[in-house]
Image (cartoon, rainbow, N blue to C red; front, top):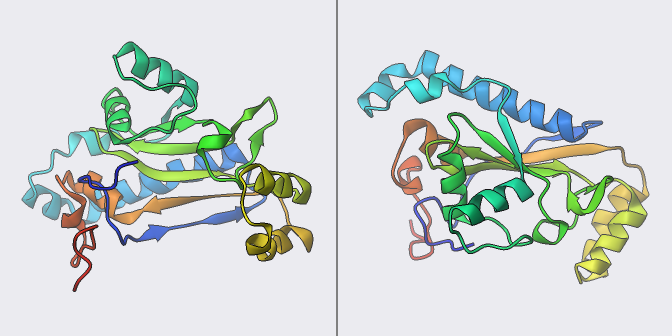
Length: 222
């Protein structure tokens, strides 16, 4: 994905929960609850600031669970019908996410991406091992991805197999394998980009407006 865009920073902040004994569905539910809480809290405590920014509050008031869901395959079909040149197996970029998010009035999950397009540690879907139990949460109004998450692989043998399939250096990941080797449980997690979330809630034009000292590909100081 291109990084010289209005939604990319070279240095950014994230909230990264990892939950023991959470499956894929539990993970999505927590994301819905967390995003809904954030939006409601801002509407309750910081309405005046949003009004100063001339933010239309009506779209934010629609943010409540359950969020809409479409599979990666459905997203590809939607994009192809709209004339986008994208094939199954390719990751979604900013223009694709923008198009999809404009079709929904509240955040939407795009789930079950191809395994080869995502990180090696994501749990394969038992019903279709070509895809993984992951989802990106796209903010509406064209803002695109604010969360990426998945159920994680907790089985040591499957994780070793994935490291080999991805061509990763085994020795560099021994510490990670030890986490499974010496005791692991089914678990899931996600990362929420703070700046992107603020950008959406405040309806800003560029992510650099969300942080005091933005680091971009051409600006690393101060």
